[in-house]
Length: 57
Image 1: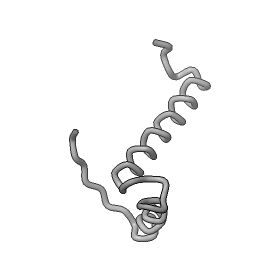
Image 2: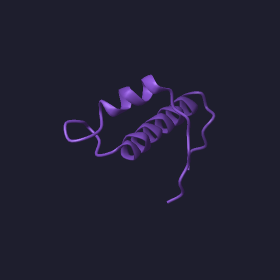
Image 3: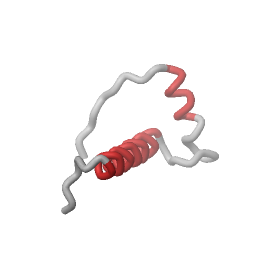
Image 4: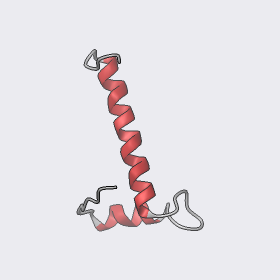
């Protein structure tokens, strides 16, 4: 799996960390970020489809 590096504002990272760990929704930061990317891309695909910009495959 390729690795990427991003800069994240401290307040966003703190909010992310509130959802990670034993009491959180995600096991680690990587899982949380991957889930967020998937959800964002799905939402963008839905918008593109409604706007007629997505080919049906």
